Amino acid sequence: MILSALLQDIEWNLLYGEEKEINAIAYDSRKVQKGDLFVCITGFQTDGHKYAQKAIEAGAAAIICEKEIQSDNKDVTIIQTKNTRHTLAVLSANYYKHPCDSMNVIGVTGTNGKTTTTYLIKSVLDSIKHKVGIVGTIENRIGDKILHTDRTTPESLELQQLFYQMKQENVTDVVMEVSSHSLDLHRVDGIQYNIGIFTNLTQDHLDYHKTMENYKIAKSLLFQRSDKSVINIDDEAGEFMKQNAKGEVLTFGIEKQADITAKEIDISADGVKFTLCYNNKQYAVSLHTPGRFSIYNALGAIGACVFMGIAMEDIIAGLNSNIGVAGRFQTIKSSKANAIVDYAHTPDGLENILKTAQEFVKGKIITVFGCGGDRDRTKRPIMGEIAGKLSDYCIITSDNPRTENPTSILDDVEEGMKKTNCEYIKLVDRREAICHAVEYGQKGDLIVIAGKGHENYQIFADKTIHFDDVEEVKKAFGGDAL
Image (cartoon, rainbow, N blue to C red; front, side):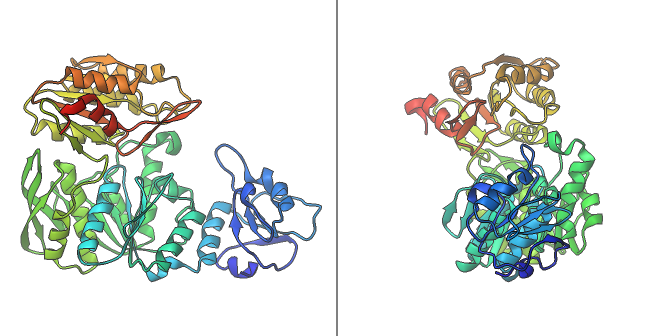
């Protein structure tokens, strides 16, 4: 593609060089081939401008930079822009010929509930024979085909490439999780969402955003680029999201007046039933995942499906067909204690899971959890206190320690636990912690293993190992697992 065509809708300044034919785009100098365009991205660990010369040596035809760079190779075209992250996103959309324009794109943002909401929508769309693409934390999907994913929202180049592949495979609807990082770091620039959904906002990612206000503002960017928005008005940030929405808005909630609401709620170990109220009509809804949070996820999904013009009977049938998501309130049963594996890794997420457990557990709640290293430290004692108040026994253990000392992380969590009367133990080894919970548990008890959910790895300073909470609790149960 001609360089000038790639630069459409981008403000740029030619430092030197001329028009070029571009083969491909790269932001990693190790992937540059002859005739490629290299975009210098300033990252958290390194600066792509340092690798511009390596890209040129590898055969780059053109370089896009923020900082002015020099090269002895005058055959290379060098262009300067104000923000290369934004530029990369627009370049990528131009290169792949804006594949989103021919698909219905639904974005889901919020601290908790993004993954489940996307899969609830997928269940509805699957039930009416649409071909669905998923972009999210657990996996990317094209119909039934599962693709590996490394982060909630991919970098813009890989994201547009994925959209292009979806278009080639006749996907009609894309349902994607949109992280605050992706919004703030311009990964989703150039995408106009047909529908945006706001689930909730609670403390997370303050290692990056620094303040909750910054975090809230980042989330709100989705609704400034959505044609229609579905917003949880019960959440404290809901009104802010509504005010920032550019198009038509549907609100949902349980406590406050909203367009879509739920009443007559019945929560059990097997799921939840409620009466849906919308447009002066009432409908009976059943979900297979327990918890009040499940209702909020369903209401958000219902709002999106209403905007798509899907009949309410089809929406309800599609929701009922969803059997749950891996690592999201996933139940493993045994002849004595049962276990729940959940991704809850924020204060709000952990509180939701434990309060849901309290509604149906006959015995004790035994909680196994930790906090990730190199992430927001301020939430550690908060989560310790929440777990202590809502559990009968706690085992504080490692999550993904990354480069931090695992013992220090456990000590931070313990500071909150000390504020409660809960009996607890600290075990750095997560496998040992799960085994201890199983040994401790009795018939009627529930073991809640929180923090990692679907993840099948554990990250340490010097290595990443295979580790799957579901596998580990099944091993601990032995032949007793049902």
